[in-house]
Amino acid sequence: MTKGTTYLWVVGLFVLTLLTACEKGGYKDGVYTGQSNADDTGAWGEVTLTITSGRISSCQFITLQKDGTVKGEDYGKVNGEIANQDFYNKAQLAVHAMEEYARSYVQSGDLSKVDAISGATIAFNQFNEAVELALEQAKN
Image (cartoon, rainbow, N blue to C red; front, side):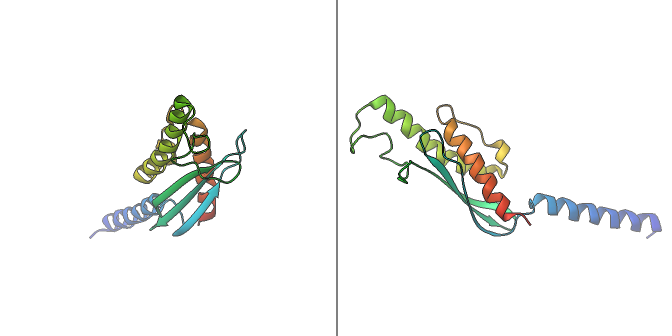
């Protein structure tokens, strides 16, 4: 092997090492939680991220009403009943969007590749804010 070839191998290995480190995102393995600020109604979002080998391996996202009640299958009901079908449908769209945001983030590994769902932009903004806060805790 010539000096030039050896130099190229060393540079190549160095670049490969840098690329691998960047690919991991510089995050420590663990479980991290981020909570968004409250919206105009007092509701907020909460993300729990699991990072394995420097990558997002799981993500849970919930939003909670002002009283701390999780927005789930009853979100949009009044006293356990659907009083307004249109309102209930919109509320449930947001609930399903929360699941989609978390799934999409794990799949892509890139927050900028998670698309907002029409009718669930408040949840989208809360998701982004909560993820950013969780990732701040996970930085190396």
